[in-house]
Length: 204
Image (cartoon, rainbow, N blue to C red; front, side, top):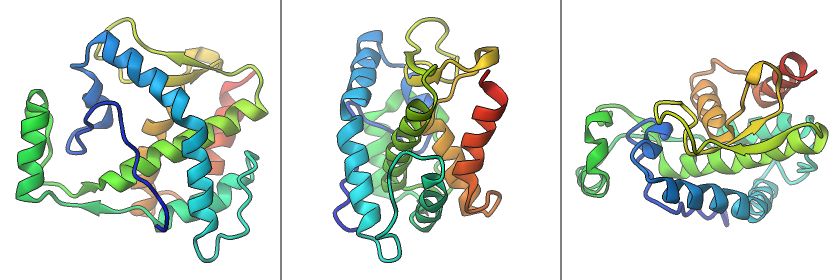
């Protein structure tokens, strides 16, 4: 992907565990820093995502205008850029050295999303979050910094304002989409369908 810069997280992210597992052992101050970093980074990350997509052959005319319809072509682009890989000996060594507390959670025998693809899930999650906000005024960010660390969205920004206390965590949702697109469980309009389900079923 020409000109794409992989995201620089405020702390080390281990791709050999579930994304949410990276937050279990973090202190509250670290999580506060992460949430602030996420919101502060959103505009520039989305801007770069748009530029990356528009410099991809076949996607020069994609309009990142935050309309629900823009998610259809975005899904097609996303699918073409999802990659998985196994773990080299050097990467395994680095993962164990930098996050020893996560060793019991690591799935080193699997092919998992590359770090570049993890980065894309964050960026595309930021974009779809803006689609929600710009088209549904009752939604807002919420930061899950209290309660049990076993809560799946602990320590991360989520979108709230849906009925039944439903919360949408953009990166988590995009990782689900990535694997679903990779194995063809989801079609090439899946981001639009995801948006429509949440707006249709979980908004008054």
